[in-house]
Structure formats: C-alpha cells, structure tokens
Length: 245
Image (cartoon, rainbow, N blue to C red; front, top):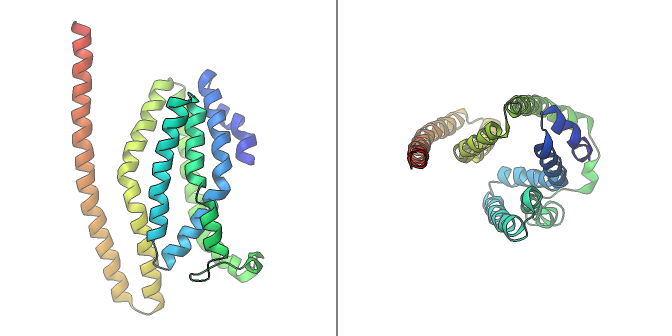
C-alpha cells in the first residue's frame, strides 16, 4: 500500500520527469500489487530449501519466466499496453504461485506446514529472528537506497544513460543470479552440520561451494564479456556504415 501511495514521490526523488515520470509511477503502482504474493513465496521457498526440496521452487521460477515472456508479448506487442503491459506481465508471473504457496504452507500435510496459531509473535523467537534479519535487512535497504540515488543522478543526464545502466544491470544479473540459490543451499548445509557438531563437513561444504562459484563466475564472465565485445563491435560497424553512406 505504501509503495502504491508513495510512487509519485519516489519517482520525483529519482529525478524522473515528463513521460519517464508517468511511466515510473505506473510501473511502481502495478508492481506494488505483487508484494504480498512475493513475500509468501519467499517464505515457502525458504521452508522448502530448508527441507532440501528445491525442485518445486525451481519449477515455479521457470514457469514464472515463461509466463512473464508470454504476457509481455501479449500485453506489449499485441495489445499495445506499453510500460503498463510490461508491469502487468511481471506482476502476474510473480503472483501466479500464490494458490500453490498457500496450499503448501497451510494445508499440505506431507511436508512442513505453518499453523495459523503460530502467527502470534513469540518474544524469544522474535528476538532470535531479529538478530539475523535486522543486519540483512539494513544491508538490502542501503543497497536499494544507493541504487535509487545512482539512478536519480543518471536520470539528470538523460533517459538514454539511465536505460544503458538498466540494461547493463540486467546483463550482470545473468551471472550473479545463478549464484543466489547456491548461497541459500550452502547456508542450510552449514547450519545443519554445525548444529550436529560436524565442523569438518561444514568446512568442506563451504570450500566446495567457494571453488564452484569462483570457477563458474570466471567462465560466465568471460563468455558475457566476449559476446558483449562482439556485439559492441558489430554495433559500431553499423553506425559507421550508416554515417559513410
């Protein structure tokens, strides 16, 4: 609700003007509708990863990508809905899992489920959770604020530069997003082994994940840099050809 109401103010803070401001407000407000479904999905995903059951969350993520692509094509190209169409496509793809998540969290008896009676806060449990959540939340918040400031500064130089930053970030996410599930699974392995007084296995899990991430990141970064450089050369060759015609 706050994101929906504060969308105009946030767009102004980020130096959005004219059509960019209108598009930003529209996009913010539509995407704000997915916050609750996404929050529920993250809870569900965390529980399933803790149970070492990552197949279903992975299936949901893959289905979300396919749904997003389909509705983006339908809304943007076929129905000519513009930025609003892209926002609705993303919102739908991130929210379609809500019925499955609710069933898995509250009604599925074959896996770990949540009891509604446990929704009432417990003092000791809340303190333990806050010790872990608060630093992580502050880090994420500072990262988001920093990105807002950077985007706002770039928008003052023109929409083209801001679009270039957005495209660059999306390309970098192709590499970095691959490692997020690895870190989540690693944290589960570390907790289980440490709690069972098995530090050697915890250390081995950490080193295995570390070597795998470093090796894969070098390979993926090299591939991305190679193709980006190739596309960059082709782009400027086309520009030079058009100028000299």
